[in-house]
Image 1 (cartoon, rainbow, N blue to C red):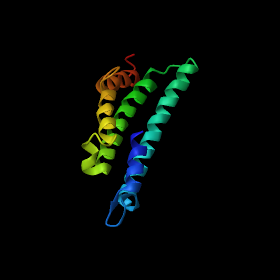
Image 2 (image 1 turned 60 degrees about the horizontal axis):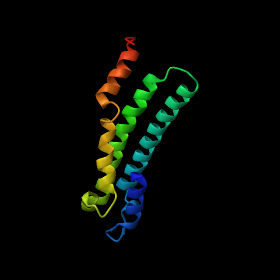
Image 3 (image 1 turned 90 degrees about the horizontal axis):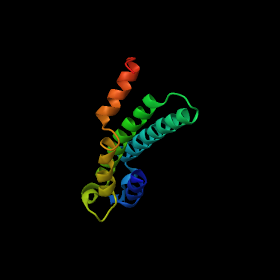
Image 4 (image 1 turned 180 degrees about the horizontal axis):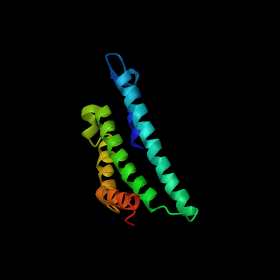
Length: 126
């Protein structure tokens, strides 16, 4: 995925005589993005687990879709930044990942629709 491409590029791209992956700012960014991706993945798994168990899952599914789309956009945007100017060129996959991440906030219900679903359930309106 996008993060793996960013990690690989950071290991290969040299700045000031060493790979940019050795810079603490890049290391912290990669660690943060990986953590958020894992959190999004766990939200998806939890919603699927609830559905498979025949339990209410609409709120959790909406949370998973909302958060996963936010994280996808954040991760891909940051991967573009790891690539620097190359991040926008079609020579590298970062630009396509970034473009593709935008659809998550629109397809199968916008982010605002997901938030509305979550709020209604939490407030007992559904």
